[in-house]
Structure formats: structure tokens, C-alpha cells
Image 1: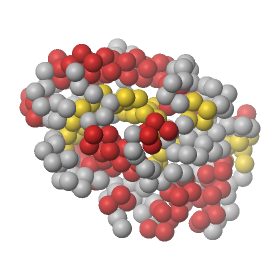
Image 2 (image 1 turned 120 degrees about the vertical axis):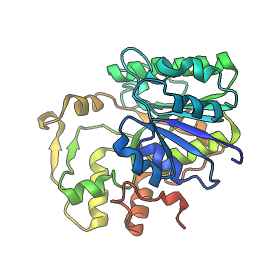
Image 3 (image 1 turned 135 degrees about the vertical axis):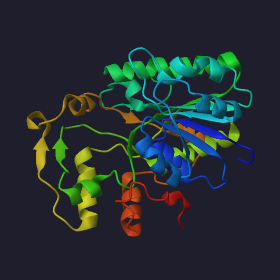
Length: 300
């Protein structure tokens, strides 16, 4: 990655994991809406910039030197906020080699528990996933227009240090909701980081499901975490009687098993192919609570 300069629009949880895995010391700039988050970005190795929907001189200057652009900002009803503010600037970036857009497996919608890969029909259910499909297409079209590879990474449920069932059990917020036949895929933040670095290293474009090998019922994940901690798991709660927010309930309206053969065929090997391997690692290392800790990718 020598000579690379990276800008992340929306340097949140996954963006910080990516930065902490920066073994080549490439300069990384990252945006946030909140100046209060600047210090956390600095600690992760990111030079912070404020982006609140408008292109600033500082962001414009960073874009002109950027070779690899990562976008992790959710779309809005009026369109992708990064493209709305900076499309012309991005289209004319003199050093740009590669674009990555972080999307979601939610674009596939509900497939009745069946397997989907990147060739599957996108039939999003929620409004947010409909907007994701549109944003994906906009970024792919921009890449084609300017002759740069664009990689779309469709992510499943993100977890890692500070965001996992071990934390929820320790905090007393874990629940075991049971909806018969329901499964979800997951992805550890370090594998998001690893996939990004791998694709960036080859300037490889395309659509990739970045997800684990083990779609599993959510109650099983909580039970496994409880077994590691040596505690009694919370009782099972039928989905029909559970008190859930509309957004949380909407996730259960989509049931699918997401395949990841494309990213493997591109040469990426998952560090945590399933939640058990990841939980074992976090529990053994004691970093399961450390949401802002150094990425375990750089630990031996």
C-alpha cells in the first residue's frame, strides 16, 4: 500500500477498525459530523475532518491527494449525501485509483431463509434498503464514468469489541428473541477492515458480500456468549410477544442466508469465519468490551 492516501467518508466503527489495521502507515483522513469525535479518530490513526453534508475546503484539499476513497455514509431520501455534496470533486480527483462503498445485505430483502449471492435479485423491503440499492448504483455508475474501479461491500450485522453479545450480557441488556426459522449473518469489524485492505491493495472493483460463513439464529449467539462467560443465558422470548422498536422488528421481516464466495474468490481469507471463532478470540484476549481498542488484526 506504499504511496496510498485514503479518505473515509463516515469514519465510524468500521472505519476506525480499518484505520487500526493500517500496517503500512498510509495517511488516512476520515470525516465525522461531530467534532467531539475527533479525538477518537486520532487515537485510531485517522486525521479528522468535519463533514455535515457540505464540501469544505479541507475536504476538497484531501480529495485532491486521495488515491483510495471509502464511503460509509448512509443514503438519505434525497440521495447519497457524499455524491450530493462532492460528486464533481470526486469525478475530477487527479490521484484517485479506487472507490469502495459500504452497503448492506439488506438490499436483498427477504428470501425466505434461502441462500443468496451477489447474483441474487435485490428486492429490498425497508425504505433504508431501497435507498441503499439506489446509492450502490450511483457509485457504480460514477466509477464507470470516470474509469475507476468501484467496490461495493455488502455487509451483514457488524460486531466486534464493544459491540457484541458478551457486552450485552454483562450490561444486562441481552435478550434471546426466538422466531422459528429466522437466521442472520454477521461480520466482525476486523474482517470488514481486512476485506477493504485486500481489495484496495489490488484496486479491485465489483460487488462483494462481506459476511461470515454461519448464518445462525440470534438466540444461539447469546447462548454461546453466555456459555463462554459461565452465566445463565436469559430466557427465550417469543418474537410475537417481544417489545421491539419498528426498526428492530423490520430486521426480522427479512430472512436469508448470505454466501461469501465472491470475496473468497478474490483472495480474501476471513479472520473470523463465524461468531464462535470471534467470541472465543475476544473472550480469550479480554478485549470484548474495548470498542475503541486497537484492532485485534494487529495483535499476535
